Amino acid sequence: MTSAVAKRSLPLSLLLYGGLAFWLVIASLPIVWTAIISFRQYIDAFSSPLKWVAPFTMENYSRLWIEKEFYRNFLNTALVTVFTVAISLTVGCLAGYALSRYRGALGFWLLMIALMFRAIPHSSLLPSFFTIFDALGIRNTYFTLIFVLVAINQPFTIWMLRSFFV
Figure (cartoon, rainbow, N blue to C red):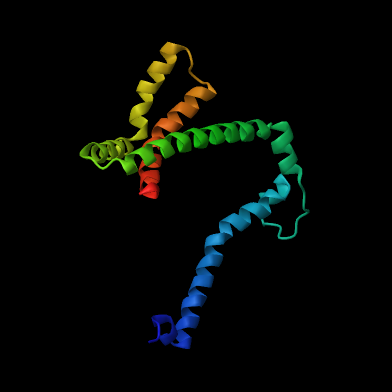
């Protein structure tokens, strides 16, 4: 028995792979263009007509990291991400394992409730979170951001990890 790929003719294969290569080049052009522009001086990047050969410079990156203090944003993002993932996986693993071992109707309904919470638009939860955090005086802290992200992602984490343990 031969597979469908082996039965495909050479011209059809060339056409398919050529089309795929063309699409890949077209799809990657914005990313490549952004990378090229990022290493040019501001004047060269937005000149008309466009200079194809422009001096290579790291000025934009040094200005971003040093003058604009991008490292603070990067560290904030890394900190929030690490704690959110660690807490979500810890709670999700425990809940997912417990729900995978529980064979009653309650386990099914807990999963359905988690799925229903996942279907709630995230923007509809924000006013209540804001009101509570403002009343507690903990608005605009790392804790509140991590708490909200864990609360939003927890139903999906439980659902996925439950199927992992089954």
